[in-house]
Image 1 (cartoon, rainbow, N blue to C red):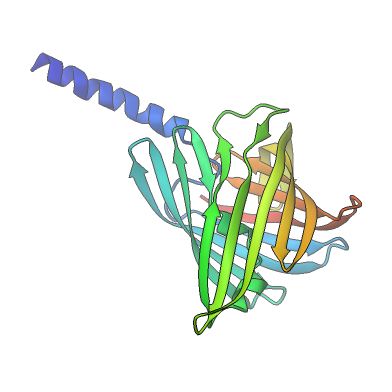
Image 2 (cartoon, rainbow, N blue to C red):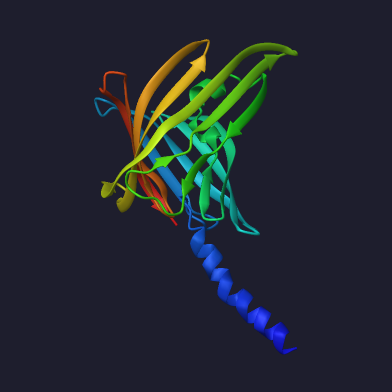
Length: 228
């Protein structure tokens, strides 16, 4: 009996440790809402998005999140809606690569047969400036009446932790890891762009910037509101 109570006590003590090891790079509480706004290089609004944590499920070594992702145009008209699955296991946070798909492109496949195969982006719970991160990719197959129409592939690679710094957006000021990366998009033709994102623990991406092959800014996204 004494050993039983010792085991129970140990489980109670270790529970918060597991949760702490899986703080992740997203809010881990049901009902949290994050809103983002996207602008072009001339600061003109291009669209916005809202992500809502629908559910939080405990895993043996972490948690899984069900997220509703809504996309809107510059007039705040809905253009795309999908569910994402994020998870944190063994002190590594995995971001659903479907998040990287262009909502306007995906809305064009609404009445077609779509298959998605993805390798999620990894964010280790302990990151150091100068370290490199694993690649991520997602492949979308599009068919109509059983006939294959196209493949769309998005690959994120050359990910590097550049700095740890504070970033201020309309939603507040956040301590973030600055991560640079390359993004390759293939849909018949191939296009490669460069990006930088600032990611905060328990929040996610609070700002991101896109650049063309010559290093010229083409657009950026900022967190405009956060309800935790």
